Image (tube, rainbow, N blue to C red; front, side):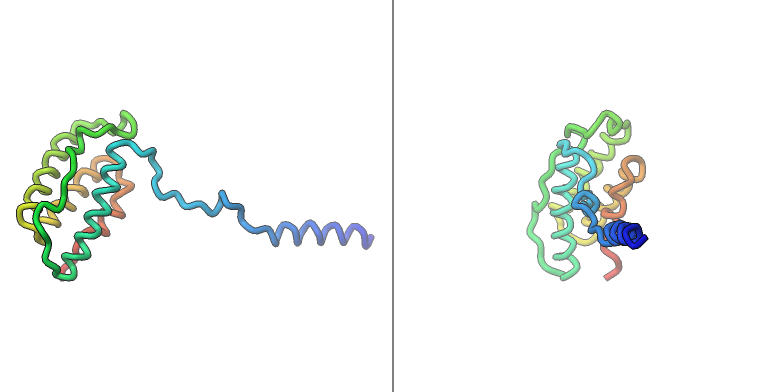
Length: 139
């Protein structure tokens, strides 16, 4: 009897004391394969995050800070990303970036972020949480 109780306790403590495996602790940072479009959007996000911080600190920004290829010219992750709104939204984004480059301001920065949000509302809504964090709230 003691033998069976010992085995049961050993099994139970073995189950309780297990530490999570490495696989269960991994956080998925970039869920999609790195297509040209995905990579460009990740780069845009990093640059826009840095600009947001400077704008919030009221730092002076130089002109022509952003230089991105047209989004709709980039290779997509898969064909489901080829939607009719992508090209006009890409052109609108490109225009907003151009206006920001001419006159870096919170207003023009916000126009860029609003373009991102509008496009992602129509497709690929996953990044909206990150895009919303790029918005500058009333200072």
